[in-house]
Image (cartoon, rainbow, N blue to C red):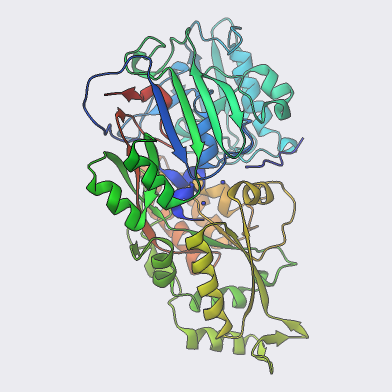
Length: 526
């Protein structure tokens, strides 16, 4: 079965792709007060998570909820190195990694987690028929998995070298067998080894989690009895940036991501934060042959006709900055600091000349046509006040170069379902964002034939650089990874719309942040 997940941002705070929130690593931040025992924690997220089946999504908001109920084989330390979680040790090369599981791990129903069940997770993801967006992301195409229950070992073998095989495969969520057998039954329920049970679900409003009493296998020796872990966690959905800020200031939530001028108000209050710089958004051009944006000249002209600084400022209250890299989080591996220099420069006159040269002529109504077809593009963007203003402004600017624009807003969960269903969506440009600390994580979004390449990008230059980088271990391939990243924007496949300073505020608790706040690391204070 392919996932048609109701679940990946109207503003940057709405949690872009997995990848969009933040990267591995992080530092503890927060109020150093006395530790609270069995407290209640409130977390506010900017979008409904939608489908909670763990192999159905790479959306940041969804992963935040899922992380309370599902663990991974490893987590990452502050230096970007894997450290034990469900796996206590591992032995790895660029094509194979063998994980040895801890003893005594149990699923939510008390049944033991076996090595075979872990292997079955990877086999399930690796089957293209299931349409999991994890395939090609954390799990390489063609990966095979074997298990030895007696030795508690799981061996994962990739047909091609991957310089970060342990780091990537080790961070996939591990589900218990019922989830693999009937994933649709767990779109609003948990069955994993995580520390929390999902005890109440109000879609679009709130998700309540309650701590298990028998959890003993967390990183750094974390158990159910570790001081400071909340007894209950309530995750509330609040889409409005200003409302999230007000909830923080009134003490009605312990955590939220806030951007722009509202963030300045929260910052001034002294509430601690986990700082981050991420993309305000990115525009993905649909390369499907049936779409008008399959034409390279059209894509180039649209990029040339976009003042990314102005759009970013609208999205984040005048605080946008040039995009340095697709990579976000810390520590980054092979990051650029000047990706914006590879984007075709903003110049409306050049945009018009590009279209003229390509045979798009201006009609009496100001809209260009070619071979009887009007130059009309459909933009799908994430609902939100700032997003609506930004894309209405963009439409007005593109109209000046002869482009007719049709705008459609939709909830993040709806867009996520459209992009990762494997079906063609009725859009030419989508407002989305992908960010990650490892360059390998971008490959399935920018190439290949899995559902993760939702824009159907086919960039030979990118593919060649990736191929060269994959033959090198670790940072020795950095120059190739950087050239690959540049080729995506130079070819007008994706247009990053500036960076924004974002912060996840943490009132009266400390935590580590990787792809999301790590539940095992939460310590409440008074």
